[in-house]
Length: 121
Image 1 (cartoon, rainbow, N blue to C red):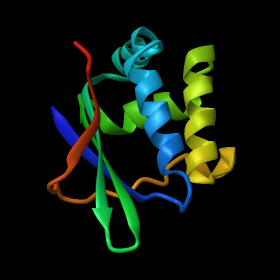
Image 2: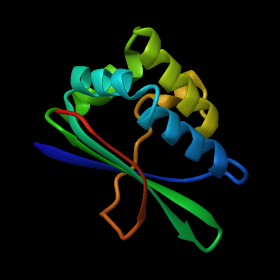
Image 3: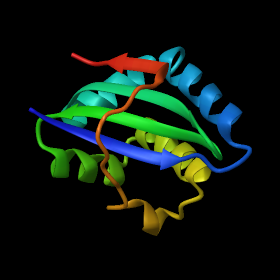
Image 4: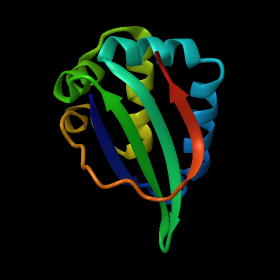
């Protein structure tokens, strides 16, 4: 089992939109998120925001069976709920569809307060 950590400095003015997305994913869209994670081989996902000097840093930790396969699945899935999530993330990240594939940076785990924790079995 691999652990993938993704970090991203949130664009100014998007913090509240990120929080609302996390709430929606942990609430009304939880079943679809868990199905997406299962399909991609993600067994656990944690999303945290850390306050830094010039904004907030998002830390995403994924426990994955096959990292490359999981990222490919997430980037190319045609399921409506997966496409909806990808569109939400692209809009918040300021990425175009072409740019979103393969742009992941890893960083060691840090202290953070939990915004939304989602575990899938």
